Image 1 (cartoon, rainbow, N blue to C red):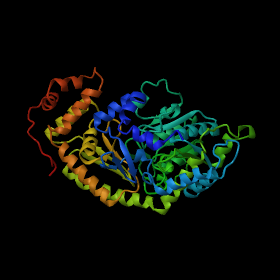
Image 2: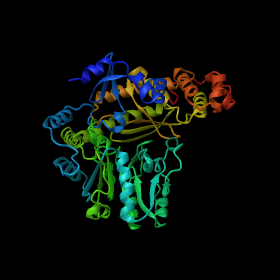
Image 3: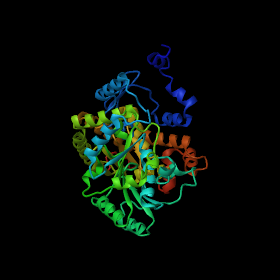
Length: 495
């Protein structure tokens, strides 16, 4: 046979970055190099990655909450190879294979709430697009509501509900009839619903972009308000679902929440094959697929592929057999307790937001003079830059992958595989503590690294990088605040 995958990979080992630069996305490769994330991984198992030199990395991103059951899980891998060996037909299109029905039944058994119809998708974004269509069709109304700070995907309709301007910019005009609400605001929600034109309110139980958690009772009351005004309540569980927060759905911990539509994806894939699910009440489904000639009025070529269905079924089995949702609860609590214990010692640590293994560490403006200068300087360069002073040393010094999240408020986000252990927590907390000690020293290497990033990546007409380039980091901070006393160099500034 002419195609040999192992030989192809071996021949091009070490060339991944140049191949991406030349043929895929050169700007992405520049960004990875700038922040020190330009590694080529050759092996993965559970919560760990390895490079060609044998160095092990702890993955605290989990593929953006995709690898809930860990990477390369042997049960899922075997299920997929068994399916391929069986030569079962897939994507015949004019047929009804057994696997989608089995996966739908499994999902219904875990979700309940009379969400009796399931439409499978290839991604969470596709699920949101389906939810928009279903909401408008079922209600005959045009308007979709969403919250500021939301992230529902990057396709056209989903982008119209994106709360981050950096994603929206350059793609205007956005579709009409999408209105934003303040986060966690029932009064604003009821006011918009009372206008009588709302088809649905789409909400993340916990916002993925900044790990913003609603007040307890908000989601239950929001669902009741939607139904009172004839609108659908749509729950985006793309990041929070499939055990991530310690229960199968995040809304399972929120009281009497009554969704009309729930959107799942990410963790359902097992980290192997893209798959998502849109679960709806029968009344909604029957408005969309209302006649025989509308039996496939919403569809997709790949949405029930055999490999995707097998990945979903095997993932649900592993999640239950290994009690991974329970592990998310226990290990998430360990992480939170460790982080909370550090707060009195480090000025930059603000709020810790956590539910299971979805964690946001918000950084706050410090009180001591020198660190206040540093904070002012970095935010003059760019509002989203500060958190890189944490992610970069975690990667370079400790081989831990972590993620910048939030909008103007700096947040470090952790969504590791639900398989991580107490030993991993110990490793992460030790690395995070050392990183905090480093960043509480100003001037210092972390701040110089941020300055270099700013000078290499920000817009040339931004005045702050120009100032930073002309002055050294310490002088620049003093100049911005008009203060000369920069002697406060405490690393444990709240002791």
